[in-house]
Length: 83
Image (cartoon, rainbow, N blue to C red):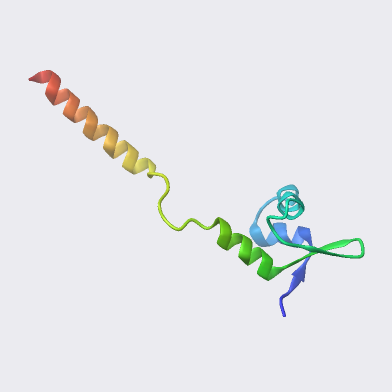
């Protein structure tokens, strides 16, 4: 059976602030349930959330790649102006 933790535990588990953890729980991005007045989250629900937001491939160019592309374009432009 999964371990159940409170929202503050979710924040610690993910390394985020408590307010963001509460936001993720209350918006339903991380599934939770109430036991009396307490809100509890299964660790499996946190793992499901992490899988849903996990990057599967490069979506953005790295800064290094952007700089390399820019330098290459500048060199091409410079050679065209010189000729």
